[in-house]
Length: 181
Ligand SMILES: Cc1cc2nc3c(=O)[nH]c(=O)nc-3n(C[C@H](O)[C@H](O)[C@H](O)COP(=O)(O)O)c2cc1C
Image 1 (cartoon, rainbow, N blue to C red):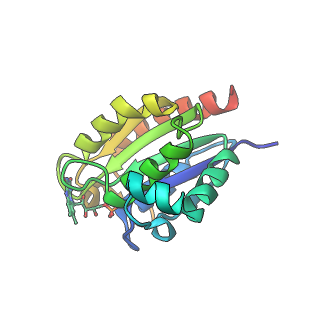
Image 2 (image 1 turned 90 degrees about the vertical axis):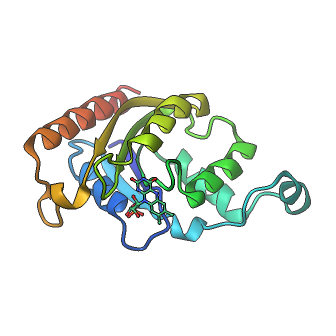
Image 3 (image 1 turned 120 degrees about the vertical axis):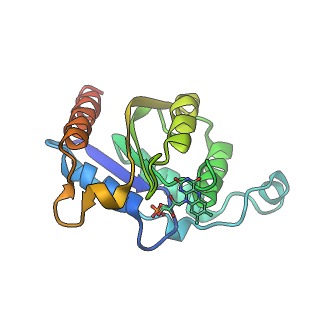
């Protein structure tokens, strides 16, 4: 049976450059199937220990964790807000972590990021590179696309040849970890 990859763009914007990037990256997978999950339905009440004690874990969080368990690996494209994770994504991770600290379930994860600016959301990418492994992610690589609108075409995808080659290599490494797991 083909391995299944869950693609995540960590944003609650309807139109999102990280969703575009993660969709394009997923289209480069050779042997696995992929689906993207949208964060918009997971725009949840802000986590607090009191809320957790009083109201328990929101159903959507249990649902999201269940969906994650059906997949063999994750491609995560990180939107950057003020040098860090978006609130919607950080909040979902906080909620999942009270169910299971190893949020990424010891599965292979490829980290991506992009922004309209020249830094390509590399600050949040660095944070994730450092911390995802502590949350049970087997990070196989990371890739940042700077100045998204100059390097991405809606029909063609990444237009910069060097960056396209780099992403293909990262996808190949990720897929080989998934196939070997
Ligand atoms: C509140 C806010 C903070 C932002 N902070 C950053 C930032 O720190 N670094 C950055 O590169 N872009 C920043 N941006 C611009 C985002 O990269 C841009 O909105 C991008 O489209 C977000 O990704 P998305 O389209 O996938 O949601 C910020 C945008 C907003 C609305």
